Image (cartoon, rainbow, N blue to C red; front, top):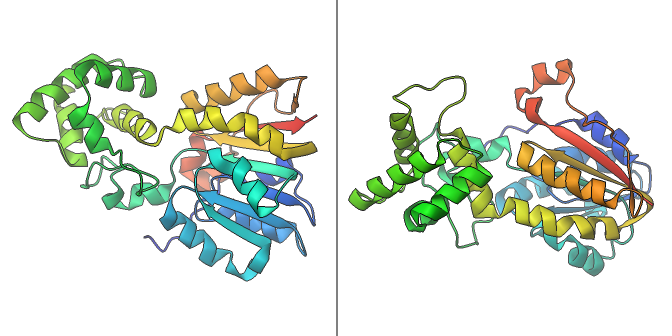
Length: 294
């Protein structure tokens, strides 16, 4: 695990969106290494509380250490945010003043080659946030039919070359099982004639596999109705997405709930300032949407 403390994206915008206040009760459904959570707990002093959930036990352990000095004001759960309703009930965290979901994977995942998220580092084809779960990227790459691979790459990676890549994966795995990130990345690079271009040709495939392994879109769709239920009237929901598939799900849900259970507070998505992008280039694709419980 890297010793670098990772920088939370859109921090001030999130604090403003959630109207973080002293004594408030908040949920960080994707606490990661605790960047947003730390500042939320500082702003809710002296007796505000935060429920911190994450599927990744390694990131959660970093967050626990980082937030240890807040004592019982921070409560942790190793689970999916899709289980937040049950966890909040169990921990006495209902109703909530605000909920934050910072979707997708973190730079910590990319930096640790053994997690298998990066095509730039040699590692096993894993890609699980929760390593206690059985499904890995290796299992999909070597076990899915060609048609299943096409669907995953086309739908979850929005890859125009999905068919070619799927055919090549099936041909290569007949000769030798594909078990490492570099095997898969080199296979895709070969199809592109060795041209990396502005975006590495393996980017979309790796995104698709990561989303499939972790059921990221299914988890989001299942969780959103529960997030609304957990909020008190006037409570805020802030969601940061990093690619168009996530943002589409969030936007569709908010629009469906508009005027029924939620007021949408972001007519247009909030993105990072130029100043933030200089400090943290990863923030470039971050989009924040905010809604308030009616």
